[in-house]
Image (cartoon, rainbow, N blue to C red):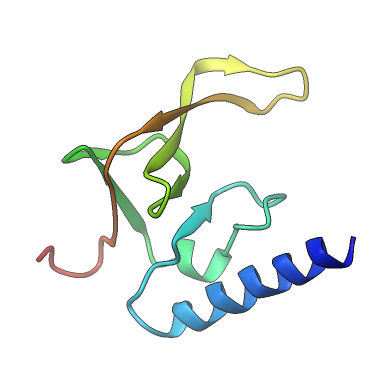
Length: 101
């Protein structure tokens, strides 16, 4: 249990540290119940390019593992959350308020 709390604290501190700079975290989620959720970074309007195509339905991404979790249409699980599919490939997160390089 302590390892899980330490991991969450590390994730939160890493996410907070990167909020001050223009670096995006390795992993980010739009779900507030996720340990990878960071409201400050999401407020800056994050865009995701997956396999060279901009995606607007990404729920979560991980750059180092090379995957995104996208919504599966309008389908919902039994708790009312959107169903998601994990898709593997190159992930390029960026801030939309900055010029693409």
